[in-house]
Length: 165
Image (cartoon, rainbow, N blue to C red):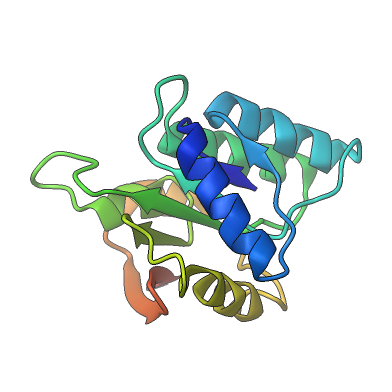
């Protein structure tokens, strides 16, 4: 699921993934992404394997959308879909890193823009392989109370987070 309020960005990522043989659906903002996940959880549409979430959107930003998706998953008792934030940087205040903001929202990683379109599908394939067994259950309360409770590691162009706990 590609979530971005800029149509050009959605199209660019969609074309890149399609050329690499991957299927993708798109949402124009965080509200639409939450609705897509509600439909998937309820069985009205196919479940997605990975969510690419733009962090700065006008309607509902990536942090809020990710937190709402995590709440839906918890309430329904379904496995967590990996969410990877996409950002040009500068998400928060100077004393809070972009990684901490993304981690606290319940995401598993962050890819900084601009994307390298040639290597981007390979990075996503590696991320999906990494989470193919199952994405770990996310303890949102622990993430909120321990904002720095993770170890970052790299897969391709993505920084993924492992919990310290």
